[in-house]
Image 1: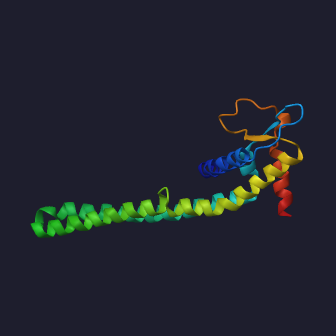
Image 2: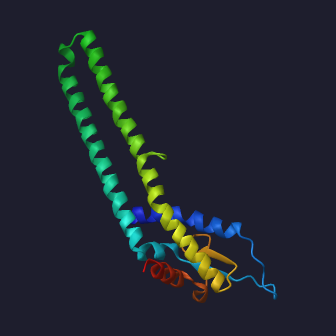
Image 3: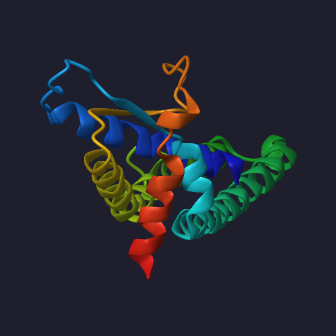
Length: 183
């Protein structure tokens, strides 16, 4: 579950930062820029939708892994049988069996890519499930930042944030905004 949570977090960070970078804001009359931070990791842990998405992705990934295990088991079984009978087979029968084994291996690799690849079914499902959550988080951050006159909001859990005073941490205000939006 920690892996899926970090994937959720990884998918949320670029969206929030890019949203803040796209909107130039006027600097206050004194020339100050107010910077706030939000701990997206904490937000993800606290939102029930994130836990539900994590569960759904984990269940789907497990179903895909189970199928891959079955395919691998079948491939190993057929390979063992072939090795046991190899000495007794004619050259044509060997070629036919080797071709069948190659096809089974290709099917295994193709299934793995279709389900777990960069543009695979799991990645597409993750994107589909996370898009509404990303949108809600982005809107809540923007609302809190506007209400409290922050010019820039960074992710506190990002390694590029080296220090942030707690008084500029908007995490729980954003979380409150997200939870109130659910009611």
